[in-house]
Length: 85
Image (cartoon, rainbow, N blue to C red; front, top):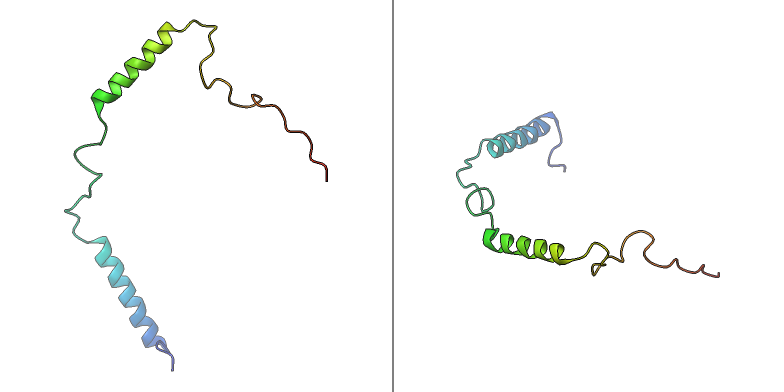
């Protein structure tokens, strides 16, 4: 025996779903959640100190000097030899 067997059952299910959707859309949103207000989680002092450190490193470096990590990107690695099948 089907639970929703005729037009009345289908209309009842559709009504319940519509009511649930309306209640969800019109719900009370007083609690904004942890990430929508207040502290953004960024330590500004630490960020500024890190930026100063990076600027100092860049100012002390000569233009021709390579940085650690400069050997990345397209073409930095040797091509792989072909695989024999």
